[in-house]
Amino acid sequence: MSFNNTNTDILLAGAFAAFSVDLLVYPLDTIKTRIQSPDYKILYTNASTKAVNRSLFRGLYQGIGSVVIATVPSSGAFFTTYEGTKSILHRLNPTFGTSKSPLIPTPLVHSVASSIGELVSCLILTPAEVLKQNAQVVKRSASASTKAFDGNATIQALKKFNKPSQLWRGYTALVARNLPFTAMQFPMFEHFKQRALAYREQRGIASGTLLEKGIVTAISAGTAGSIAAVITTPVDVVKTRIMLNAATDEGGSVGDKQQTLKQAGAKGMDSKAELEKAQKTAQSGRAGGLAVGKEIFRTEGLKGLFRGGALRGAWTALGSGLYLGVYESGRTYLEETRIKVAAATVE
Image (cartoon, rainbow, N blue to C red):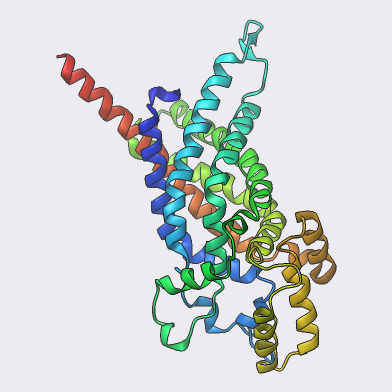
């Protein structure tokens, strides 16, 4: 394993990092999901003033339970696969010339390793992601508006699914978002981190401490993550639409249609237009990503494809920085502790 870490080191570091970040940035993810929802105007805005309703900011931790349960093993699987694949590719990558330059560029190695890691991770994460996003948009009653954590939202979302296979609808969309995201983020992250550490070394200000490594990693990961997040926003919007309708059969359920009509009428909107929109949106649960993307572009334009992009970039900068910063610090700490214990045992 690279960096002299065991699989246990990487699993523990990845799991702790994922759990920490989920708790901190989950509210921002909830707001982003609601903004990208096809029913955003109906559920979260005032029809007359176009102002955002307070309901947008209620129940910001709805659905977090399923994510915490799945994120720990999925992140552990990602980092184990990523580090292992990267180590293997580096060993197999031949060098040439006096400079010993690798045949395959290092950024490409990092892209391939992260992509393989995502394919494995998404298999575990997809059901939780589908359940989470459906729980995030469950309408809360006024009596529940003061509760930050609401397990009932997850239960309500789960009741929408008639069979377990529906929870895996959106796997392709999740992979289609995460593959280009990680393929862009990790090469940039590794490059930014190496340049920052080299710069500090050349200036004679490097301390070599765990804190320094964690801060450099966090800033590098946050910068790389925000860039990749904004670029991949259209795919994220498509993924959100597909997952929000994963439980909907062709044509949509009667209950969903009635609910849409009721909400639209209460806000003074065109009920017929909103029903047609609901029917088209419901079909996206079974439609391909490209078809969903075309429909969004046709009805909402380019702005619709980048809906929530600024927020996604901001929370990804924070989330990625914390995620990889905690992971790198945790991995290094576990490695150093294990080496010290081994040395003390030998003595």
